[in-house]
Image (cartoon, rainbow, N blue to C red; front, side):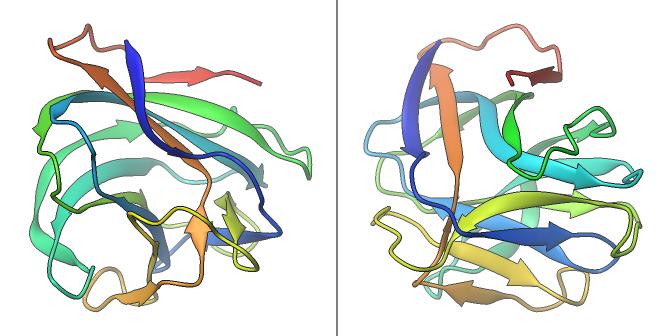
Length: 172
């Protein structure tokens, strides 16, 4: 497995995902490949609900389109509560991503509230990932905001072949 797209430095705040609040990061691959894993810098508060990590195409305004390309339901209740967070690896069913096409990677909650959620580390001071941006919905995905002045910390992994599928790995 090989790392393709990533934003791994910086970070100064946390993006929330709970209830109708959805956080995400768009990315545009430089190389076509099969996406099989994402690694996200996260922490949890309380006992979060289930989540679905989803991949969507983005439109010309950088916002997710209507159809999920691939995704997986995950239990993120084992993610650290340490205020610093940790890298969390999540395997996805293999999906072929194309060079130069913008995709949205979303952390989609099944409920929760401000006391029971997972948060994704965000750089909204000096982000340097130029092939994507921070995505946010406060109404369950009915509409989206795209923030070019922020990025969430992520890694996007895969390879030329589909990989075995096994869900969540806390890297720590």
